[in-house]
Image 1 (cartoon, rainbow over the protein chains, first blue to last red):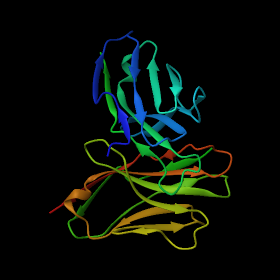
Image 2 (tube, chains in turn red, brown):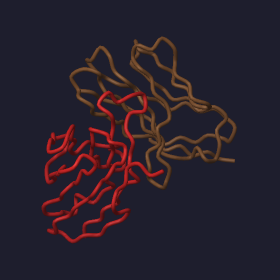
Image 3 (spheres, chains in turn green, blue):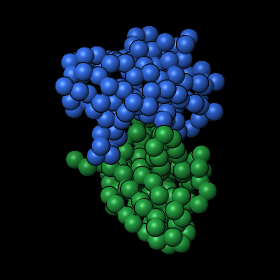
Image 4 (cartoon, rainbow over the protein chains, first blue to last red):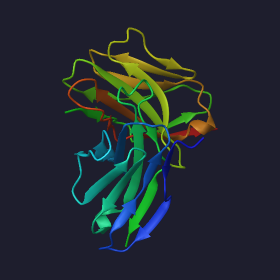
Length: 114
Length: 116
C-alpha cells in the first residue's frame, strides 16, 4: 500500500559529494515536493514541480537542484554536500486541486553529511 | 506570504485526558485550507484533519477536532481521550487557494507526550 517511496531511509555522505535523493509516487499525482525538516524549524520547502520537466524554487533552494524526467519520479540533488545539509528530507505529492487530504508524504530520508 | 505559528514546542498530557495544540496563522489570501499532520518517531507524516476557510462548521475526525476561529486566525487541534499512541510530533499547515500555488506552509511543530 506504499504510495510515495523514498529510496533511502538513512544516508551518510562525505562533504563535497554529489548526492541524489530519489522519490517515486504511484498515484499519478502531478505535483511533487521536497521539504527538509530540522528541529525547531519545522518543514521548509526546497523545490516543487507541477509537471514533468517543470520545477520551481521553494523557500530554501540554495545548494540544491531537482530533476523530474518522469511524472512519477522527483529527484533532489545536492551538487556538493555540506555539513549544514545534514537533515531529514521529506518528499510529498498531491493532486492539482489538493483535495481535503493535502499531501501524501514519503517516510523520509535522514541524511548525514560528514 | 503565509506564516504558521505553533508556540508549544512540547506538551504533556495524561492518558484519557483531552489536549489542545495551538496553531495561529497569517495570510492575506481570502480563502485557504488548514491541515494537521502527525509525525510519529518513525518519521512518516500522517494526515489528521482538514479545515477550509469557508467551512461553517469545525472539522472533526474521530478523536480529532479542529477549533477554527477565523477572526483570530487560529486553528487549534483538540485530541480527546488521549492514548499512548498519540505521542508524536504534530504539525499545523496551510495553503492558500489563490496566489500560493499548491504549496503547504508548515509550523515548527509541537511534540506531544502522553503519559500513564
